[in-house]
Image (cartoon, rainbow, N blue to C red; front, side):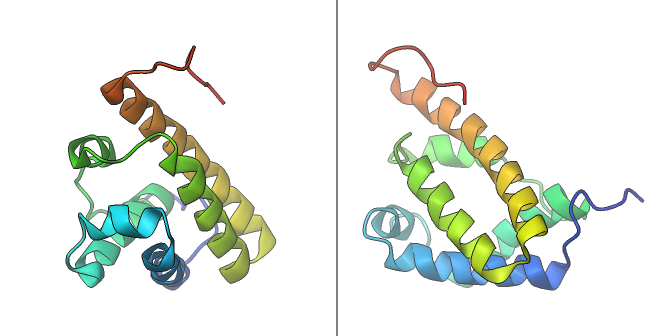
Length: 133
């Protein structure tokens, strides 16, 4: 069995997911986007929890494709990712000690960059060269 990528517990991951999605539901821009696609928040949070537990703890149980899900949504835009990441960072730093919060944030930003690039490719870039940072 592989050692965890980050020093986090399942309970910490679950707590971050719970607090984060409560904030998403209240967010003026992201809330309506999520509401169009999520009808059962507890099921969605459990699925995203499995995603992060696989990414961080190497636990089995998640077999989805975040890229396909974001692209299939149709209304996810590149400009949503900085908002999502800022809210996620705020949640991480509020819930976790500084070191694991920073490490999880770095991982989320790497994943977010890839998802954003996929969404930009889907919708076509019209504002210049790709942003690679």
